[in-house]
Amino acid sequence: MRAYSPLRYQVKDKIEVSDLEKKIFDRLLGTLSKFGLQTQLRVAGGWVRDKLLGKECNHIDIALDNMMGSEFVEKVRDYLLYIGEDAQGVCVIEKIDLKISGNQPVKAMAQICDLTLFRTVFSLPPGFEPPIADGCERLCITYLDTAWRLIQLLGESTFTDEEKRIAMYTALLLPLRNTTYRDKKAKHIPVMNWIIRESLKRKAKDAEMVLDFHRASCELMPLIPCLASNEDVLECSRLRVMTGFLLREVKEFWRVALLISTLLHPIDDSTEDVQLQLWKRRDVFKSVENRIVVKLGLESVRSKTIGEGETSKERIGG
Image 1 (cartoon, rainbow, N blue to C red):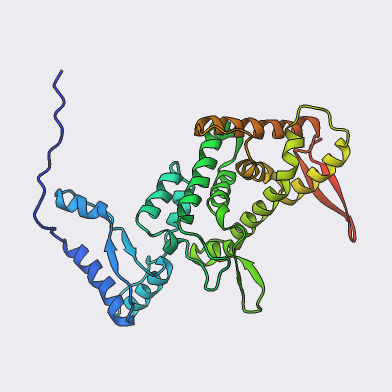
Image 2 (image 1 turned 135 degrees about the horizontal axis):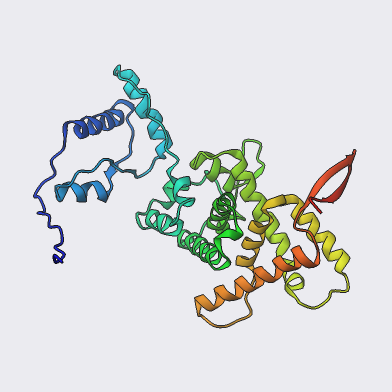
């Protein structure tokens, strides 16, 4: 059997740019010049590394220091049309959503944070309040990491792909759940609405769902001690009604609300063992899930309108 021989590359002294790459860079710089954009373009390390090693690289990642990618893409399109070139195919690739939905969402968001691009990607509206503390980005990553690891402990089959995607957004933005800004009518609006719709250019439905889960998780938290208890509750009917109303709000996504509530639920343990705390949160989740599904029979509760101003809860398939 032939011994393994690692590939060896000779590091070059300078980067050799192909004609196509030069054309791309010229168009990007031309866009800056044409519109007087005061932003700095930086080529990410992957392309630079491959070029220095003499390897082919089929994509170039460009980082902007003070401008959203979607805004810059529109300017590039306008510039190409201005110089008479085809702008077809120049569009925003929803890369953040692909990363948050992928197999390594924590690593992807941590890299954005390490590049000091977190507040650029997840940009905030002007005039938000209260002020955001230093290190908020790392707290966002911590919540995301805990949610992701908890999902792995529970078993990925517990959640659908769509539930996992929206759960990742909800966990990531948890530290900003009480931060608002004023719209043109001076109405207080949660900053999540701006981040998801304006910064990330996601659908309004995504913003609404994240807001719903933040609200529902806060309302579910006070019920967790009772729902997680193995003891018979004297006010079981009242508990069932309160829980039913919450589930009716988030419908089939109720496990996402429970996941977020479990993240926020204080664990009665002074240990600093992160894995042990995760196991305890998993046990809380499973206990509440069992109470909702088996003892209260509320897994498939939905709202059904039966008359003007009147609703009833209906069991689906029950």
